[in-house]
Length: 558
Image (cartoon, rainbow, N blue to C red; front, side):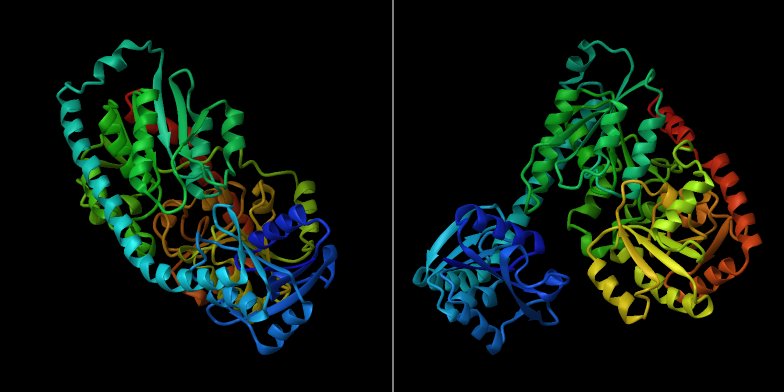
């Protein structure tokens, strides 16, 4: 028996389909058809497989040429296996046609839920016509109806939350007595954050948890059950209660998240609740108001969502405007965020306060020189000047400007090397841009290593090229480690750097000025040393996590 496995989804789905074939038909010979990136570095016949390669067009769709189709026919496969990224494979017209055109008698399709279904050739033809015509045409209508239902339920819960907030203010909330009856030894604080994946907001929260006085405050953290749980071990290690909301994944039924959060708050009965990060802030305000939590806060860790319109749900701005009036305080991580949210969310100035983020100073102690030399040796940049940038590989971080600046830096300082730390949706495009700009041997992508302090400390210059920011934690970390920084004037970045004393600030999107400041630092070692020393003193005096924790607990009346 010979089985053709198609890469009709991501690389993980291809491997999952191959694993299914190995489990069901262990004696079968396997032929895989995948794109060039997935088979790069693999030799035909690896893992006992025959590997066929297809090209992709500009939209990322497979190009099934006449020659490729003939190669598939020559394999004389008995079965074709493909895996969908959705439930019905409604956008896989070209992949679906391949087994039909190649005359493969049977097909096994695995959808996004992991369900595998077998088809004969004739039923596969009918399924393809239905999925790629009727279902695909119906998708926009279904999406509209589900969005409308979601928005309607959110609106209803918000109205109920407003009524509950009035009762809470008057001391008439029905759950007030239930909370008063439980024993109380210290403040019980509940924090909801959407994800514990790698990110600046999550790093700040971890430092906050480490710095809170447990004699005064008992903390529990709640998050969604997402695949990326980068910071979970750190939370568990601190002994902080961590729970995951039980709500369905996939198409975002946001009202179900609010309802699951309401039930969690009802069980926890905290004295204060904080929504940490955009849209978690409004969900926490609604849920905590419904339950009657005595004190409710929103923690803003970035500038307004208007700066990222592609990610802005239709309900977010009106809910931001309304829920800011339900909570006791909106806590902005920088003055830039405070001013931006006041304008965008029409938040009264008396409601929103600035508490600058801080870093755990014990976490950002500079490693010994021997360890730094070992880090540079592992990167094979022992004697080369090293530049680094840290952040999610997505549009708002504007790594493209960094790469364009690096091309100019490389011309002036040919021995320079650069590392990019982070993951994100823009990684494939950024890798291609790196090659196009002739930086393939200059720039190294390191992904998301579990510990980056030694990497940061080994840099000669730390760069931030963002277009929007809250209060960039990485700039604080870099300066605390004695590394001079060059940053764009994004959000609260200016509030972390003393221009000309601890680093330099350039306009957003200006690769030439970014490059000029990087070149200036790389060519002037005494300047780098001076800025690094002043940067360390600057962070240690103003941006400690202990100060941040004390300010937040003071707002909670502790």
